[in-house]
Amino acid sequence: MHDAAVDAVTDSLANIKVKPDIEFDPDVPEILPKEDQENILITSALPYVNNVPHLGNIIGSVLSADVFSRYCKARGCNALFICGTDEYGTATETKALEEGVTPKELCDKYHVIHKEVYDWFNIKFDKFGRTTTPLQTEIAQDIFMGLYDNGYLEEQSMTQLYCEQHAGFLADRFVEGTCPRCGYDDARGDQCDSCGNLLNPFELINPRCKIDGSSPVPRESNHIFLSLDKLQPELEQWIQKSHKSGHWSRNGKQITDSWLKEGLHPRCITRDLKWGTPVPLESYKEKVLYVWFDACIGYVSITANYTKSWRQWWRNPENVKLYQFMGKDNVPFHTVVFPSSELGTKQPWTMLHHISTTEYLQYEGGKFSKSRNIGVFGNNAKETGVPPDVWRYYLLMARPETADTIFSWRDFIFRNNNELLANLGNFVNRIVKFVNAKYDSKIPDYDTNVIDYAGFKESVDAILAQYNNALKNVHLRSGLEAALQLSARGNLFLQENKMNNTLLAEEPEKANVVVGVGLNLVYVLSAVVYPYLPDTAQGIVDQLNAPLRKIPDEFALDLLPGHMIGKAKYLFSRIDEKKEEIWRAQFSGGSQKKDDAAEKKKEDKKKRKDEKKKKRVAETATAAEAAKTEPGAATPVAAS
Image (tube, rainbow, N blue to C red; front, side, top):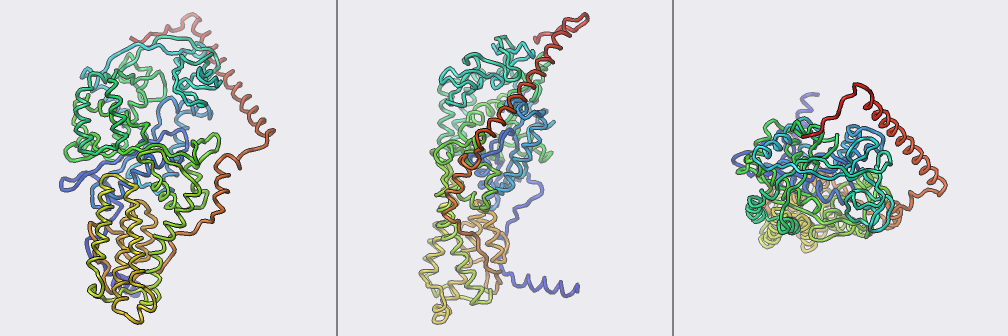
């Protein structure tokens, strides 16, 4: 039996005839920079941990970065892709309060949810970590102290709202009240969810503490500020160099310029919270670092949790290029705050080379809203039964690169049926089935002189050049359009040469060339769609009985005569147009509405629960105040 098994494997390998040195392995144990290769460090904006990501979040950062990472690796570059959940800050404390859990419990829950969503979408991180780690504390505090020692931190006093009921300063999101713009009763101290205006807590009418409902009072609190004004000259010099060499996205440069034009001012980087990286100064030990100072450092600490040799990536500006992906709202923190922090330490940090930003993806003309069940969120996509690659394709074709775009169910179905199925899928299936049936799945000997091979190759090479140029400059949507042009060229090639039974019977030599050249175009197509549609690429090479291959500069005949291909399988399935209205109703709040009585009962129950919680907090605070007045009670020491 053993000998028979060995013989079977030997026979199988003998049927695989592929040119050497074109295979590429997407799984490398530990990726470190190499002197003889292009080293690319890729990050996508760390998703905030307190909610499920929606489609706009996914295309705005992680999916776009994943495409570029896969492209770099399939081109033979030494690339590392880093991401993770952003877990500290006010929003986490607020959400934990709402769910009745600790911030740590909330982060543990949502970290798993995020990872499951990204795994389903085939986002292939080299490390997906989190910011609540000892290495995050160590590295963030080290950067803080570098800024402190170099004179780029200063102390200022701020007036904040203070809750006397539970004896604590209130972060903006812990203050609620009536919006001064639209009159909405449940506006937050940082923004009104009704009219969308940004606010500060002192603007609210009748402000109240979110925790216990009492009325807060103004009180002074000392904080640490990053002296961005002192760093602006050096920052501007770096920006002028980086944006030119790295070809920043237009909106990334415009947003950065607007900050610089206004003039940078000292920015507060500490907060009166418990959930965060502790400030490494004795007089500030009760405060934490502001999450937007802390969060970008998460890229570094997550890399440090990936490899002990993290400095080879982050302290190696001469040999590493940093590419960062995000929505436009995150730009200033990546082009102003984080680079200023790096510059201020006077350490040789790897700094931003290229920033790729997106505008907003709208849902059917409106905003995504988890609370109102409007829009598709990461976990909903799986529920539709539509494969991940179809979702990836649609989102990347709708990527809002220069202006807001709109997710549309009609367009979603159209693109699947008329582009993926009728173009890409049709080309692959047509030729593989033909070779299965007419050539016993074996590539024949052939002579390219029988057809105008030079003209065909020239047209394919032009598309490949367009594709590689687009991806190299991070024009992801243009790259995908070029990939579809390649499959369209394949369909045209089969039509021009009339690949059918008549051709095989009357011009067998020409049929052999069409089959040999056509299958090699399918093989190249598998490579160019791999960054965008990894499952589809794998499905294609499985049918070709060949390994994943590198993305080439030019078309070549790498599947050789005598190579045995596998069996044809459909890459895509048609979506019934009737699904449009079903899905629109399902994800526009319609199918989730309950009758008024049941909804009111649910709201009343929640209200009673909240009142009990506020009562318990108030009783605890009262008891604490009473304890302070007893003989022997300690006197609080004010921060110096």
